[in-house]
Image (cartoon, rainbow, N blue to C red; front, top):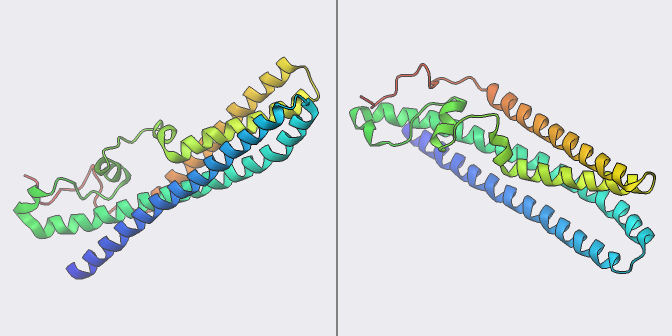
Amino acid sequence: MLTALTTEHFTLQSTRAATITESLGRSTIYLGSLSASLVALALIAQGERTLDLRFSALVILPALVFLGTATFVRILETGIEDAICAQAINRIRHYYLELAGEHGRYFLLRGHDDMEGTLANMGIIASPWRPFFSVAGVVGMINSMVAGALAGVALDALAPRPIALIGALVVVAIAFAMHYRFGYQRFLRALGSIEPIFPTENATEPGRS
């Protein structure tokens, strides 16, 4: 049993590393595409032809919004996978602590396999504000700003510029709220579907006096 759990622990840790690598790679691709697109629009803007700039923005920005949305969803999925792996590792660590007995005090990290215990081992306090500081939250905010820019460019062709600016800000706020709501509920639903065996509030931690 110990050998099997040790192998599983190693596999889970490798999976966590893979999720972090994928998250970094996807966010890099998105930000690189965004930077290249902004440079292209800046070069077009130097031509002082508003129609060309608007047309180019209406072609480029929708593609960026799609790429940003796909990146946000996948980074969210990798974050959920990472959290589930961390929860599984905590459950295995609880077995280590049981085997260690009184020597379990040498384990700094605890073996609670609920969401609170999982986040505590990462040095994170569970809070509704945490998604704002995650990679998915950053990508969601940037993607919302791109969506707002797209709306602003479209409205600028149909309405006075102040109205277009206000409309763009409204779209940014709505888009970010949608990103946040989707991501946070998806995260809670995924982790809430796993029934903890050693929850923080009820479990007696082995090896802790």
